[in-house]
Length: 380
Image 1: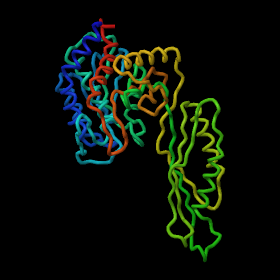
Image 2 (image 1 turned 120 degrees about the vertical axis):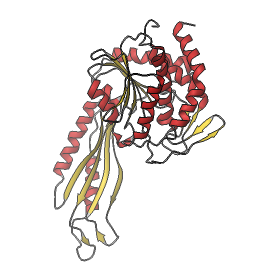
Image 3 (image 1 turned 60 degrees about the horizontal axis):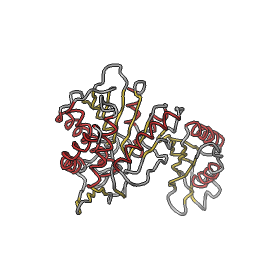
Image 4 (image 1 turned 90 degrees about the horizontal axis):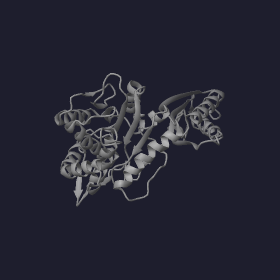
């Protein structure tokens, strides 16, 4: 057994129970996107209690623990998000059946965050010599209309120095190196409306919106990269005998390519601008998640191969290299080498029946710590 693997095995074996207890404590703390304050405070205090000397919560509610970060050295970022999809502000319900732990958000992303925190504890307490600055980030706003705001703030503030980026999210088969970007809009139509009998023939917001949907579904997708679009929700009108005054819909388009997203945006804007009449149309941009930018593919492959090799040391299943929408979208859009790696076994993400297998925590901790140790002397 080489030196690095020996350190990983011994450290994880000694800290499994502590990781489980941390998961059960952190997993009860509510953390809707944009309202992660309670979890952020908990994580900051936890890092300080382990002996970290440079820990802060930034303006985006990211908890940043800096290790060997000077004013200008290169940085490797290791991130897992604090927010979950549920709006609860009361303690989250949790139950344990055998070795299966149930709670909303427990796998997405609480267990991955715990594996990161526990792996970071090794560096905090052992203080090995590091090849670069290492930033451990418990970030905000990964889910839904959080719009990756936490990751965006990290890249805004430190992107020019970041040479490597890891997001820990999803399940243990996942090793993502390609970003699914998206643009999301709310489109609203307003008219004078009226009575279905007395004002028959007046513009109807629902009919107008329906016609607009038909136009949007004539959009041409690029043939270079997978690109999609969708109307996911509609609402409007009041009663069966009312000409609708107002109707709205939610619309998005997605692609792995940022240039394809910009192509779709131009089509969208042209359709909206050309759809005029005796009515008012307004659009509200709800969120932008960028797709892949220009990046050296050979370097990205080597970077991803290393992550895959580490995962395979501790996980025997087939790896999932599919494209996803994660915190890594932001650095990938900027050409920064990035992977999203899952470190837990579980299921039913984004449901209140979500669960994780506690017996998978040791392997997940080993994956994270092994990746961290690739930035430490003299192990590698």
